[in-house]
Structure formats: C-alpha cells, structure tokens
Amino acid sequence: MGLTRNSPSGHAAGAASQPTCTKAGVNHMKRVIDVVVLSDLHLGTYGSRADELLDYLRGIKPRMVVLNGDIIDIWQFKKSYFPPSHMKVLKRLMKLAAKVPVYYLTGNHDEALRRYSPAVLGKLKLLDQLDLTIGGERYWFFHGDIFDASTRHAKWIAKLGGMGYDLLIRLNNVVNRMLDLLGRPRMSFSARIKRSVKRAVAYISDFEETAADVAIHEGFQYVVCGHIHQPQLRTISNAQGSVRYMNSGDWIEHMSALEYADGAWSIYMHGAATIAAARPEAAELEPVLG
Image 1 (tube, helix red, strand yellow):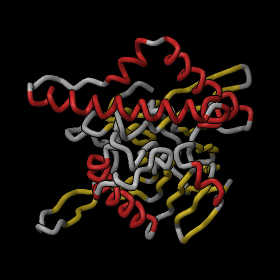
Image 2 (cartoon, rainbow, N blue to C red):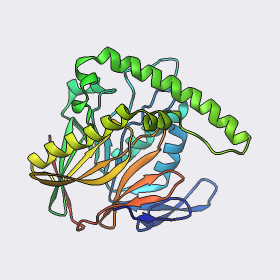
Image 3 (cartoon, one colour):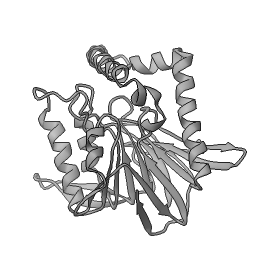
Image 4 (cartoon, helix red, strand yellow):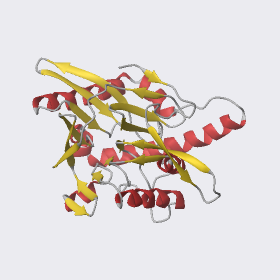
C-alpha cells in the first residue's frame, strides 16, 4: 500500500512482544508474529548474512514459519565453508520446528531435496509448494524458479551465474567494510547493476506478472514467492481479476522477511523501516499440503 510504519529498530510496530531472559539476566522483548516467511538464505555461501539473520530470529516468536526455498545453497555447497553462524541458523530453525509448524519449500539451489518431498518430520514439513488459507483467502506459497527458464533449461548457465553473483557479493562486502571505516554509506553492486540494466528490470516485472497471472487463474488471492531477491508487496491485475503479490526477498543483500501480525502483512528489512501491506481479517491458518 506504500505505507511505512517506522520504529526505532525497524520492527513491525503492531507486533506484540514478550520478555525473554538472556544468560546475562537482561530482559529483551521478543516480537510475536503469526507467520514469518523467509527465503534465499543461501547458507553455505560467502554472501549469506547469517549473523544478522540469527539476530533477527532471536528477536521474534513466530507461530508459523515458511522457508520459501534456497535455504541451504546445495549448488555451491563447500565442505570447507560452513561457518558456525550458518550452523547456528539451522539449529535455531530446528528449535522452532520443535515448537511450531515449519514449512520448508524447496527452491532451485536446494532442489536436491525435491526427491524427498513431500515429507513430514514432526512439525517440520518438506514441500514444493503450500496452499494456505488465512482469513478466508487463499495463499499460494512457492519459491518461483518454475518461471525461470535458465534454471529449467540451461542449468549450467544459472549455476555459472550463481558463482559470479557470489563473487560479486564477496567483493561488495570488502568494499562496504572499507566504506564503513571511512564513515561513508554502503553500496550494493548488484542493485546498481539491476537498476542500470533494463533487461534485469524487465525480468523482475515479467516474473511478478507471470506468477500473478497463474495465481489469478487458479483462484488464489495472494501469491508468495522468493527466488529473484526482490522484496515486494503489490497488487497485480489482469483481465481475469487481481491478486496480491508478495516476495520475501533474501538474506544476502536486502536482509528481508515477510511478517504477518495483527492481521496485516509487512516486509521486515533488517535495520530499516517496515513496509506495511493490506490487512486481511485475522483467522486460523488452514494449510493444504501440496
């Protein structure tokens, strides 16, 4: 809706909080969230912002978690690189799965898991997509790589691009550390490239509209994706109707998540303001496994 809810720490203003006690005995407030959607964590790569993600996970108390693909980057997995912080993120997610429903939806970078889906291990469910009803409206959760021709028909190009992207992020991190020391604002190489290359902008637009068209045709009111590392909340319409398109972004550049609390969806941006969305009625969550 273009509305921004500001808070000192960038947290959703409407989310309830509960006190927690650290080892040092200091109380901190955890935000209670009905649903949190995370995607494109790319754990196991140099670009993954696992420390910041762990900080975020420690500050929330979700009632449901949707992991919308590319959680562990199996494409670029290296035995020599899986830092403790990445493992701590996995442990935190597994700890959540012992208490609340956690849906792990497969993406292209963790597509090796698709041979095992659907699978259920307690409250942890491995799926390729999820049909969820919230407030009487249907939501379609899936990673989104099915709309990307490069991941389906030219996988070697996609993998090569992934390696180049990881290298770009590593270089960007070095530059940003230098900018921090100089007291200058950080920059995003990939964001600048995307903004300057019309083809990349058109790709994002085509992806969003394709996902929306299919969702409208299938009778969904919301479609929730990841894959393109572009957090978004917007309504997309065609001749058959309209749908609310949402994208959870990533934890490499944007450090973003989708949150549903107090009957409203919003984009959480780590260290930034929270962008609010539409406010459907609060209701029980009714999942339909797919």
